[in-house]
Image (cartoon, rainbow, N blue to C red):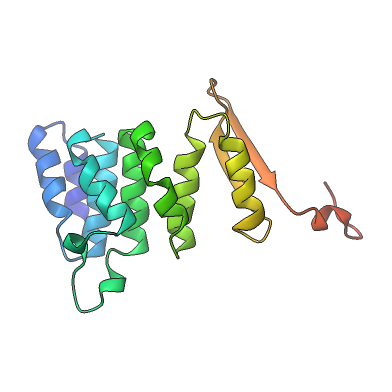
Length: 168
């Protein structure tokens, strides 16, 4: 994993090749670091492999005696984050699979990618996720459309605000 992090900092084409090769490693630590490095390098050539890892839908990425254990939630999240870093528009295609994942960690990657969308309906979709996918609570930080100003959105079902001693 440390070698992947070091390679990601090198401004050499062979660093991307090394990181892509590391996607096939048996340790989720190494694969997670490789995903992070490819995202940091914005390695467009790795996008399709990262997409497959993020959704965990290909037999080619299933290893070991426990197919459900690979790729891990950490790998799927890191691969999705790398897809977002490489090509936010293309990454929108993996949002449905990420949001349907059993892991809340992986679903959060789907929400992060969704928040990067240019689509005006994104806020509605995020609000829908907040009220249906997380017991009425979600905290999402994203960038307001067309600006570089961070916007924090907190959506609740209102019970905290209505309870005795609650606050807005």
